Amino acid sequence: MNGIQFSKKAYLVLSNGMAFEGRRIGAEGESVGELVFTTGMTGYLETLTDPSYCGQIVMQTFPLIGNYGVITPDFEGTTAVRGYVVRELCETPSNFRSEYELDRFLKDSGIVGLAGVDTREITRIIREEGVMNAKICDSVPDDLSDIVSYTVKNAVASVSCKSPEVYPAEGEKKFRVALMDYGAKRNIVRSLCARGCEVTCFPQDTPAEEVLKMSPDGIMLSNGPGDPEENTAAIAELKKLIGKVPVFGICLGHQLTALAMGGKTVKLKYGHRGANQPVRDLVGGRTYITSQNHGYAVVAESLDGIGTQTFINANDQSCEGMEYPGKNCFTVQFHPEACGGPRDTAFLFDRFLDMMGGERNA
Image: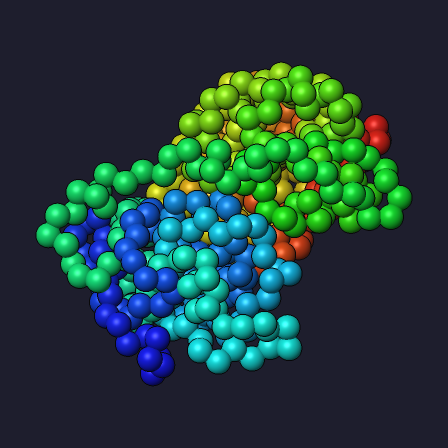
């Protein structure tokens, strides 16, 4: 990092008092957020534009970031991160699709960043102590109260669309899908449209009656940020939707469905973020490599007698999927639409289409 844009000293200060000196990248200013790490070797553009990172400072464990530049068609949404931390930021990207360098994207998006810190050491700290808050700043503060007291609030409302949006099907229109936008990644819409679905994207607080008024063939529940239990209004509306038409939930949609069905969620020590999470299919026995981004998990035992666990994380045994017999509803914690990660589980979209066509009753 010899470029002049990296000459200004800055710090990453953790809520436990530890401080790491680095060099500024991205926008000027200071920022406080929940510090999380992601293990993806690629997909940094998808990470930076994933609304599920709302309120968080994202740290990449892979040591070199930005080497293929910025490619706008790969964006998943509008960036909502509070900060960005890397070991080394590439100044001279090389890729035939590259439009410009990543540092410019960070500046244009108002993202405060830090490079040159030991991301491996910081990752070990988070793995041992759990996710904690942090601040990117010009000097180490004596008072850490603003770091310690920070919480991610109203995250879903801040990233959801503000009015209904319609996306046409590619080719022949086969189904009409209502997508509840809790912070939806664009590739969820792309995956549905590519399969002949016309997608109507609804704001997160849309009443169930308004959604059902369009007579959807199915309802898609998107990913999103924050504590799932905070979304009491959305959970109340889901209770009115589940069982009416086929429902497929991803990530936060998986968690909100569990809460709507009377289950519980729990915050993980440091979450699952990256494109290499092993997930075992409890029905077929196969293990899939999945892309994930979440800090909370469904407590499968809290749904005994209500739902059936279908997938489990092979590392920590946390719940990765549920099916609700008689409700025509299934959900997964991972991202079958992931563009910056494995596509092993894209078949789940086809299963959703089967349900809408009446060929499968979950």
